[in-house]
Each structure stands twice: as C-alpha cells, then as structure tokens.
Length: 210
Image (cartoon, rainbow, N blue to C red; front, side, top):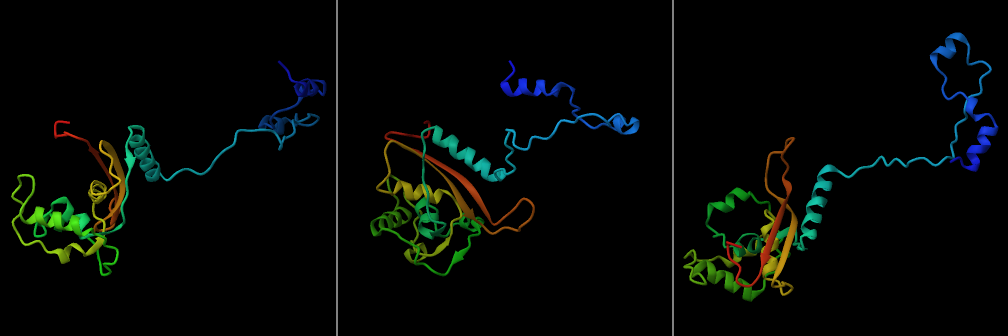
C-alpha cells in the first residue's frame, strides 16, 4: 500500500518524472522539458561498512568460538617462557636433538622465569630416574639450564602450565591459541612468529582410547 509520502508524490506528478538521463535523450534533445527526479540525500539507505576483519584474525576467532562452543576453557601463558615449561616439563631430554628443530630465540634476561621448587624437583626426578614405572632418561638433569628464557616455541607450554596450575579443574577441557616463535627465512608463506592451536582434556581414568 502507498504511504502518505507516496500519495503526495503521485499528486505532484511523480509518475511522470524522468529517472535517468540517457544517451538517447542527449542525442534527440528529448531531455528538454522533462522533470527529473531529485536526489534525496536524507533518505534511509542500507549502511555500507567498508572495513573487514583481517582474514587470519577472522580464522583464529572462528577457531576460538568453535572450542568455546564445545565447552573448552581458554588457557594462556607468557610469550617469554622458560626452558623448563617450554621443554623440560614436557619430558623432552635436555640432550635430545628434538630441541634443535625448535630453533628457539633465547633471551639474556632470565627474570621472567618462575618455577616452583617442588615442581622443579619432580620434573628433575622424572628425567633422571623416571616416575610411574618409567625409567626416565638416565642423565644428569641441569637445573641451571631450565632457568634460561626464550620466546615460546610451542603452545604445549600452555598445557604444561595448566596441568601444574592450582586452577586446574578435573574433569576439564582446555585450549589455547598460542603465539609462538621459531627462526625461519621470511618469505610469502613463512614468518618467525606463528600461532599454534593447543587443546587438552583431563579427567579421572582417561586413557589413549578416549
């Protein structure tokens, strides 16, 4: 149905208004004597938003929302991490070549390292003698090396911290989108910093079948 504004326009001869100035009108001068529809610069039109989220940021947000919708809680950790949480607590032996492929950026300042003495003792024992039936790696664990600091090379450091945290809930589900750093040659597809998605599920009597 017509609104009052529409009825008013009809009374003013709106139906006979020319909508466009065409090339034909210019050629045959038929534009002369015609009344063209005026522009309404105050009319309500769809709002156009020119800005968009950066594609990679949009992808990370989608990953985050997916985990949250599945009941996971987000965990985090410092970017400047200790060798302890980044590798030792993950039962990675200090002499192993697996550490070399991380190509870590080490930093001189070790003040960021925070390690509870009891946790250090238990990890040291696990490396040297083993726990829960394991024989360990059977080498002399270097505590001083654990205090070295680096730019986090893997998101699993967040999981290690969460498992040792007093805030850990059992059962519980946790995830992290961790910014990590490893040496790389910069080109169109490589940067020295990247993100890793990390997730853990903890509970009583869980095993690999779960």
